[in-house]
Image (cartoon, rainbow, N blue to C red; front, side, top):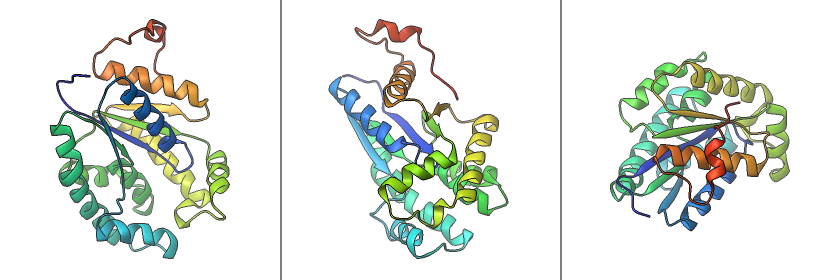
Length: 222
């Protein structure tokens, strides 16, 4: 499938919303159509900063200042080494968490100041063509998390996730720079897949082939 340029899509939301699952489903679907799609995740496993962030999930939180610095260092490598080269090759880049997660997860620790964290990152890193925020009741998200783990990590306390979710919704409502799609993550996998697929086709200004019924569907907000 010939494209004029690459596309950068970030998948965001609290843990347990199914964003990673949906990213993989959409990736497979687009590859079937002939698109070249790469998928990355933050924090990465490739940098010392990324490894320190992941270790802190289990061993305990570092200071806010240290966390923010680690994310910047890890993101600089990820953007420079993987994301920008892939976009230059006209690939579709899916990123599982980006600086929106940093703004919300670390923003809670900064008296709910997601704005300054977002501004700092935007000075350094590219804006996605589309940011998909998966929204879900925290109790449901916790149940999903617990299916796969014996215990939730230190990032996933009930009240903490409530606060993070609130910041994601506030960001969606108030940020005027990003191009957002808010997904009700309680919908079925099939429904969410169609919503995102239609939004992607709108993004690249391409009409669905043999799926004309999708034209009439509007991307769902919440």
